[in-house]
Length: 75
Image (cartoon, rainbow, N blue to C red; front, side, top):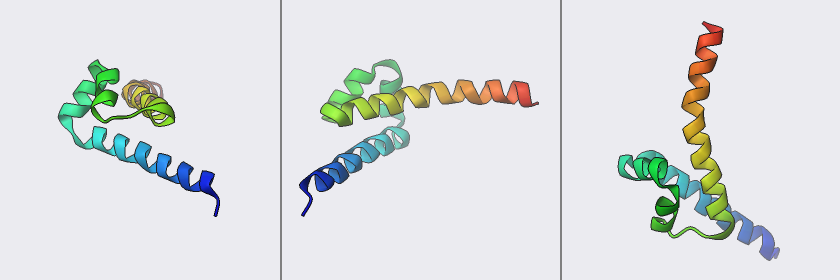
């Protein structure tokens, strides 16, 4: 049994679950936008999961701006 793979899979599941919760909850999404640290504290994230979710939040914040720029140049 490869313990690292199991731990990695568990960690990946925590990351995906946290990002899903943020996307589905207007309140959590608003908090993640204005105070990402508090949102991650609220979900009990730490370590690698916390860093990965912070990166995901940053991506969610940048993506709408990127879509409008592409729409401008493509349209």
